[in-house]
Amino acid sequence: MPSPITRRGFCHQSFGFGLGAFLWQTLRPFWSPNGRRHTIGSASTGTTPLIITSHRNETGRRAMETAWEILTNGGSALDAVEKATNIIEVDPEDTSVGYGGLPNERGVVQLDASIMDGKTYSAGSVAALENIKTPSSVARLVMERTDHVMLVGAGALEFAKSWGFEEENLLTDRARERWLRWREERSDRDDWGPPDHLRTPGEPGTSVNASQAETHGTVNVLAVDADGDIAGITSTSGLSYKIPGRIGDSPIIGAGLYVNNDVGAAGATGRGEDVIKSCATYYIVMRMQEGRSPQEACEDALQMIAARYRAVGLDFLPGEKFVAINKDGEYGCATMRSTRVPRMTVANRSGLSIYEGTIAFPTDT
Image 1 (cartoon, rainbow, N blue to C red):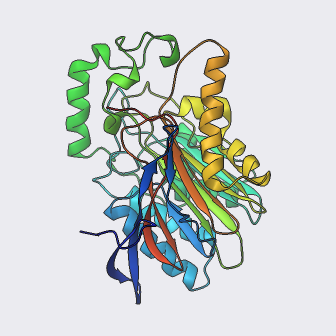
Image 2: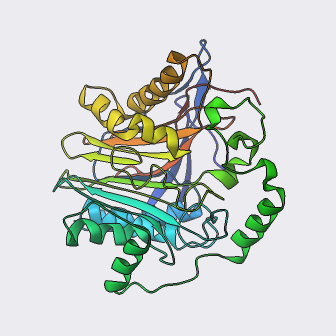
């Protein structure tokens, strides 16, 4: 197990990374006197190339290894984010993205994804796409081979097949078992009724009653390459057990993903309705343009969303997580409310690391 070696809170564990030896680092957090979580020191070393993902498991590590090899060989940020995302999308053990993702209320897996290329100011996305494991790659073709930004449903599937993608059953046994369990209990675990913020806490149907692992899930991958160009992808199987046809924030440019080649990029995970209403990733990038660090900009977006609910007399905190990078190679992440510190995987010239972000409104349980 890693152990602290300095008062700045870095922990190291060596492992192979490409052709060289890199370090797995954990930046340890602390609680400030006013109750907000901050970070000791700065993990944002400001070096490029840089690539990050909101995933922090073994699949996320493998995705970053592959992407880092692309970047260090002079490859583009666009290629790096796509190949990294594909590794996560095809992992059958990941129930939040691609193959193995949790289905809608009818037991059908519908995928959403977006991609944005800062170098060309181009974007593409797909939504409610069925039977294709790697929706991020289809989104790239929408961006590069059409003058559209978004294709949805049957049209997105027809487009993917025209480019040689093969239809496959995306519902794994594991995901099906979870769906069957949910279906037996869904009288108080579905999405029918008023929005969460207009329900009484604990009322049947409120999404916070359900396990976070079974309701929210998305991957963000953001990168800056050696030429200073920025690209990003957001990919998801969406809100589990959702009403068929529901589209979240992930395929919407400015909500689930935004890239400005002169500034940086941001991605969102969580229950996407609030990300859509707030244009959160666009807001984060604009805050960075105004001089805020990626970490500060992520926190600003969470405070902005909370303030909008306070403005209409509601004490409501949706479960969002934001990640961001800037052109200088700095990065950050933050979540609205949680009992666990938000984390993401980072690869840059300092090695491969797990970065711990901040919680805007910490809970004790």
